[in-house]
Amino acid sequence: MSSRPPLRSLDDALDDLLGRAAALGATEEVATFDADGRVLAEDLVSALQVPPHDNSSMDGYAVRLAEIADEGVPLPVSQRIAAGQPAQPLQPGTAARIFTGAPVPAGADAIVMQEDTELADGVVRILRVPDAGQWIRRSGEDVTRGAVVLRQGQRLGPAACGLAAGIGRDRVRVARRPRVALFSTGDELVMPGTVPPDQMRPGAIYNSNRFFLRRLLARCGCEVTDLGIVPDRREATVEAMRGAAVDHDLILTSGGVSVGEEDHVKPAVQALGSLDLWQIAMKPGKPFAHGRIGDAHFIGLPGNPVSSFVTFLLLVRPFLLRLQGAQRVLPAPLLLPAHFDWPRPDRRREFLRVARNAQGGLDLFANQSSGVLTSTVWADGLLDNPPGQAIAHGDLVRFLPFAELDA
Image (cartoon, rainbow, N blue to C red; front, side, top):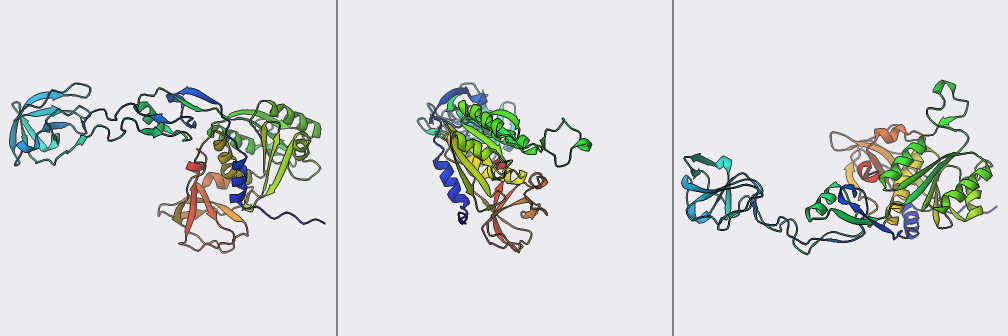
């Protein structure tokens, strides 16, 4: 009897998977309004300074510092400057009424905020001597002309879209969305809404994986074709795979890649292309498969819902981002204290479902079973625990927030 191959570390499996994720290459131009979540396919270089001119960060008065030796100095108001209006040079011995965002007049070197002044009959008294440059935003302090403000391979978020707009870009070039075919296998699966809970046949379960995988794919910027539930028959599985491989970049399934007689995904992929079955030293999520059918990648996730959820976040999501040319595919972990004990660790690397508490630490969900999807809803992230590492209350541990893993 041949021995089983050794378990692969998660880092090794991820490196291998990312090495197979050649960028799709195709790009498209989209409106900056619609670029959230897309991967930039070009460097964005600013053709202007941001802000374009020195401007006030407060409502108040623009003054010459040399003319304010002491508190209580009175200065006649010589002009009023609102945002979007041109400013005249500041006349000697006067102050200019100025509003937030308005250009600072030539000759002024400080802004006194409104609360530190008194105005009467067109004369303002300066109640507090300002510092040089006070409340002045300098031209180019945000972006200088010629600077690369966003780089190719960066995944755009709301702030990045705003920054692109701030340098005048109403459209940006981004990587094409990966096209993903998603289907489920298993005659035990039932779609919610088709059978009431009290009429479910023995052994049947509702198909929860299909729901969260479809949304996770969409959040990765994919175009998803949902092929539904494929019957547990070899011919049906082969035909579904063959059709999906024609115009998709990835075929994604959960379950059905074991060696059981009713698991037809494995022989179907092998009949049409190539398949590697990996046993990864992680918990949950040990079984994982990658293959190719023509030009399409195939990834088979474990069937247990938490295993499927976690392996998607840690393996499939980085793979899909790399297909789009993204450079950063996983967040850096946060170091936070564990507010629980974990005295019996697994030999595999564990990803425990935890939630941050009001004291700044992490609480543990009581049931860490790979079938308890409730744990992923209660939690707000994963604790990345090394193999064989016991945890005592107060130990610093590595925390991966869902906010960065499923966005």
